[in-house]
Each structure stands twice: as structure tokens, then as C-alpha cells.
Image (cartoon, rainbow, N blue to C red; front, top):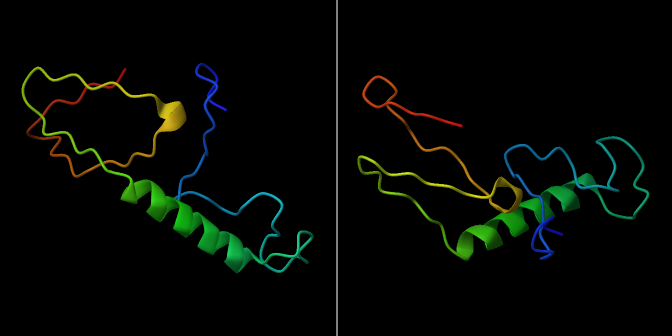
Amino acid sequence: RHPDTGRLSLYLNPKNTRRVCRLPRSGWPARSGRTVEEGDAMVRRLAERVIETGVYAHAWKKGDLVLWDNRQLLHAASPFDADKYQRLLF
């Protein structure tokens, strides 16, 4: 649950997920009856579903400020020209 709103949420990062909880690491016997491959497939399906619901890509303009709640957001960086633009992270 989200700590402020109480809404149900799923912590998922398809780029950095090692395995689904209660599923074995590669080579370990499955305790839950599922395989590592099934867990990997589940992560892919969930990530695809999140992306299907809509992706926001900000078209930056001078003076823009964008805030988001990292506790309930799937995000990834887009290409950024650090030689041309200043980027401030707080």
C-alpha cells in the first residue's frame, strides 16, 4: 500500500528485478511450485500492462519543473544532452 494514500500498489522494475519473491533463484528447488521462468514472464506481463495504461513523456520547455512520487511510478530516463542542457536534481 502507498504510505500516504493507502492505495494498493505494486513495486516493479523490469530492468532491475532479480526474481519474484517466493520463487527460487536459478537452480534452487521451487517451494511455491512455480519456476523462475514463470516469475520472469509474470514481471514482463505486469510491466507491459503498466505501459499499456499510458506513458507520459514531458516535452521540456525553459522554466519547467516536474515532480513525481517515486513510491508509485514506473519511470526511465530518456536520452539527455548534458553538454547542452543543465539538469538539476534535488
